[in-house]
Length: 115
Length: 112
Image (tube, rainbow over all chains, first blue to last red; front, side, top):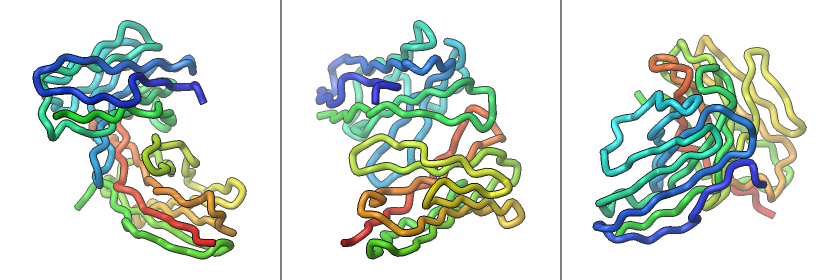
């Protein structure tokens, strides 16, 4: 499936590195999301963009910096991460974040390891 | 109380069995409900939305009980390919329609 794509699929980075995760959706949606999924924990919402505007920031540390240049693309810039930030980072999109009941579709995720 | 609570399982059932999962949610104002499935090391995929009147999609039936604040998923005639983690998802209206809250998931293994 190519509805929502993410790159890279795997990333290993040191605590002093700077890297970026990329997400692209081909579904014509207007809302995009970043989630974190750690082992044995439920998905945690990080950021929400609706029509390119950031509408939610769930108390995410500033070492994670999102960017949404248009409705189809979403980035997550990473710097000075900690080992506990190692997780699966999932991007999702939906038609419109303000509409209740609209389903979200996920990309395959980036498995991040911070050493 | 967790916002969305699921029995983590694991549920190990033989092929052809019927299995049911329940999920409870804490916010009575929640309006949207979904079941997602997540295969090992893969992303969650939407299985079905849950409507007030209940809905069915092939072997899968979802029910919503607003009075008791629980959602159920019934899988009939289990297949090996049904093995996955099933996530109960509820919208969080206290913030906005933008937030979905995911349960921790119920693990299902269908055995040959």
